[in-house]
Length: 176
Ligand SMILES: *[C@@H]1O[C@H](CO)[C@@H](O)[C@H](O)[C@H]1NC(C)=O
Figure 1 (tube, rainbow, N blue to C red):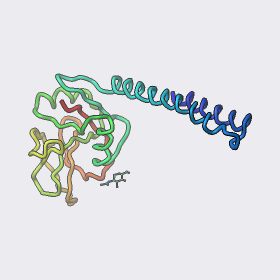
Figure 2: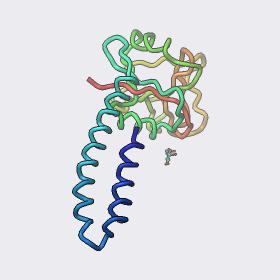
Figure 3: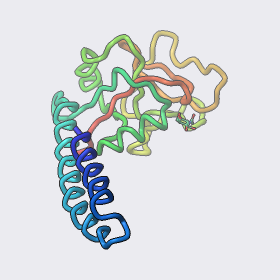
Figure 4: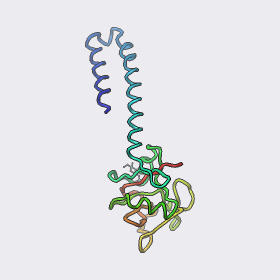
């Protein structure tokens, strides 16, 4: 969708350079034309962002979620990606919310906003800074595989503590 404006800009610049030469005062002309085109590009960007937003977030219960099934990133990047969309890594408040999103997941691991910040069996929500409101460990509980900082994923029906540097899918949630 961005190709058209890019081509337009190219034609304009190439055209100006060809017919007038950059030396002959055409620069000001070209830049005044480009400004209009850049406004147009900005409008398109906004429109595209809105479309992407509407297409990608889904309402479950009273909240909007984005499920990244395809891209895998470490926990920090997952949080950044959610923020880029105006959301945050998902904070799950209770069992009801948890059960409501499970059917939307594929057989991947999905980051939530929970980490132990390297402090053993103390689990925090990145968003609230408070102890995680809801945890549901897999059978056998957290595994403490020796890495200091753990982050939490959902895998099938349960939560797993993972090395935050692992590359997993993730769930974003709009705050409101
Ligand atoms: C997460 O991944 C990004 C991009 O691959 C990288 O720059 C960053 O250092 C990683 N962070 C951690 C904590 O592994």
